[in-house]
Image (cartoon, rainbow, N blue to C red):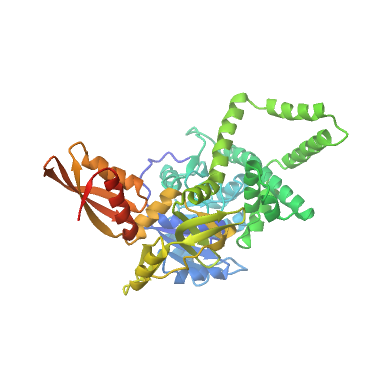
Length: 516
């Protein structure tokens, strides 16, 4: 690794090769495009890359079509490649050598080049070979798929003996600043190239387990269900927490959102650093089947299970048990939110997702099944002349009629069936944040005469926490009035026609008098 000072690296232009679709497109659009003042050019043989030129939502990204036979960028002069500070290789593992051979000689010395392949030894070796010591080479591997929230996900960074310190710092910050966890093994400054490649080999062995073996298990399970003609929807009606987790992640590896999905998963299996792990897994399955078969004794199966558990350190097992409780709790969270909303008649937010659009609705859950919910939408909207969309929340038919007089409209108030495969249930805090940001919030003041023992801020806080339709309550005026206090509280609410009578009922129930 270079021993030059770790100056701040602030690239202005990045070339992403092969990022028209798949993981490369997602990394470019969701992560790299968020880097301030960075112009991104995507080069690909897929003609869809030209669609980037008409995407007004990402003005810092443009697309260039490459020749399918030669890989050369059509209409782009060779000298122009020297204007890029960073090159991101978002191509399949098998294409790294050809792409590096074609483009690396065109780059200026010192350019940062990195890949996002799922194995590291072969891509890094190929990049080093074709950089001829002129370029700063770094291997990266985002250990997650397209569309996940980057927060809490792992990104592996594999430096080389040519990596500039400032380039490593920049790559780390790109992912870490957006919530990712970084795995990078410390290396001595005098480490040789071979020692750096040893780290890449270690990465490949570990992902043979975390990706290769895991995908093998998921595909085996799904193939079994398909062979036995077992419907996923039917089996989910009898789900356990463990099966729910297993089938959710199994379904993810067959959710091929574009043509690159199968190619990616196949490349992971073909590129396993330890392919014998698959045979070992099959041998273990045979051993378990033998112990569990009718001819086997219960003692033999118990011994198999207990022996497997004893093969791991107790501390590691306890840690994994803790993680499993967290994971199961998280997986069940949508069911908990829906059940709570139904039982307690709380407002619940859902995002309806289709291939062409997504839409937020907020309302009441009337019934919950494994497949669907009965949902009564309470959210209406109105488009202003300036194009801005205003929202209004209504809780009954009179309120809906009043909102309609103001130009608000929406889905009918009667409950309708929403299929859960098209739904994302919003956590309560997300629903509240959405309402605070987008809702048209009526305001009103309430003045009461209370006895001298009352604490005005406490009264406001109790009103805010006890009445769901009240968003905020703030004391604006307090002064002595005979033997008590005259208190004025300003409210911001969701539905003024519900909040006002409930607030008056609350304070009169405490024995205070409302000043009209």
